[in-house]
Length: 440
Ligand SMILES: NC(=O)c1ccc[n+]([C@@H]2O[C@H](COP(=O)([O-])OP(=O)(O)OC[C@H]3O[C@@H](n4cnc5c(N)ncnc54)[C@H](O)[C@@H]3O)[C@@H](O)[C@H]2O)c1
Image: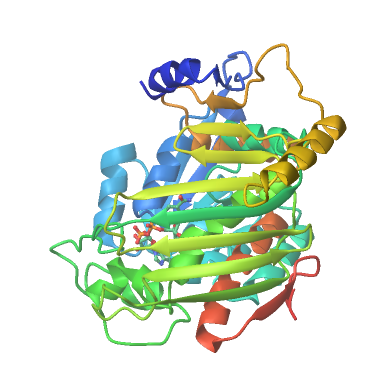
C-alpha cells in the first residue's frame, strides 16, 4: 500500500518508484544432517527469542540449547522449540558442549563482552547483540579474542545487511546528492513500552531469577525485579538511549558513508518525564564531527508528544537521501548554474541594467524534458533485514569469510555511541580517534 500510495503521488510529481530486489537464496539443496550449523541461545529475552526465530529460518540451522537467568524464559524456550532443547541457567554448560558451533548472545549489555569472549575461547562463532560494548575496555578485548581464536563474530545492529542501506550506500557513492554535508537521525518513542517499561512476570523472585548470575560484575545489590526485567533503565546493565538506539544510527551512518566514526562529540539531554528511579536520560541530543567533512546530529526523545517515528536523512550539496520504514527516497536538487539575483530594492533602471548583464552571462536554458528529481526505492512487503543479517553470519560460519558487521565495525559504532554518555556525564566535548578506537 505504501508503495502504491507513493507511486500515485510520485507519478503526479514526475517521480519514480522502484521495487528493490531481494538477494535470492542459493538454489535450494537439501542440507544433510551433518551439515547443519548447530546453535545455542544465551540470553533468551525479547531480542534473543526474536533473533533465534529469524536465525532458524536460514536453511541448515538447528537450535540445540538455551541459557537464561529466568526460569520462565527457559520454560518458554521449550514451548517454542520443543522439549528436547537443553536449557540451563549457566551458559558455561552450553559452551562446554562440542556439538554447538555458534551462539547468539541476547543478554543485557553488561554481559556482551564476557559471554562473547567465553564463547570464542570455547571455539564457538558468535552473533552478539548491539551495543557491542558496555565499557570502552570491552572493545579491544573482543577484537583481540576474535583475532586470536579465529572465530567469526557478527554484531547485531539493525539494518546493516539491509537492501535499503545497500541502496542508500550505492546512491551516495554514485554522487546522487553531491558532497555529503550532514546526516540527521532521530528515534522518538512516547509510549511506556517504548521507554523500556517492560512487563515484569508475576512469579519474578530470587527463586525464579538467578540474580547473582544476572548481576555478574555489576554492583552487588539485593534482588530487584525491576532491575532484572527493565535493566535498560540503569547504567550498571544498559548503556542509556545512546547504547540502545544511537548505536543503530551510527552503524547505519558508518555503513552507508564508509566512515570509521566521529572525531568529536557533544551531547546533552535529561531525564524529563520517566522519573521512575532510572538513572539515564530519556531525552538525548548528540552532535558529532566526522573527518570526511560532514556532521551527524542524533536525537532520541522518549517524551515526544507526537507520533512515534524514526528516520535517517543524508543531506548533500545536491539533494537528500532519506531512509524511513521500508523505503529509501532520493531527492535530487542539482545546483543551479546561475547564482540568482536580489535586485528588487534598486531603481528600475538599475534592475534592467543588472538583468540584461545577467542574462548575457547566463542565457535562459530550455531543458528538453523535466529531469526526474525524486526517486523512491521500496523493499518488498515482509522484507526482513534481520534474516539477511543472519544469512550473512551463517554464510561466514560456513565459508570463514568476513561478516558485514565484525567486532571492529561493532566497536566503532558502539564506541561512537557511548561518546554521548561520556559527554553528557562530563558536561564537555569529548574527542575520539576512530582509527585507533581510543578516547583522545
Ligand atoms: N538489534 C536490535 O534491534 C535489538 C533490539 C532489542 C534488543 N537488542 C539487544 O539485545 C539484548 C537483549 O535485550 P532484550 O530486550 O532481549 O532484553 P531482555 O531483558 O528481554 O532479555 C535479556 C535476557 O538475558 C538474560 N540474561 C541476563 N544475564 C544472563 C547471563 N549471564 N546468562 C544468560 N542469560 C542472561 C535475562 O535473564 C533475560 O532473559 C540487549 O543487549 C539489547 O541491546 C537489540
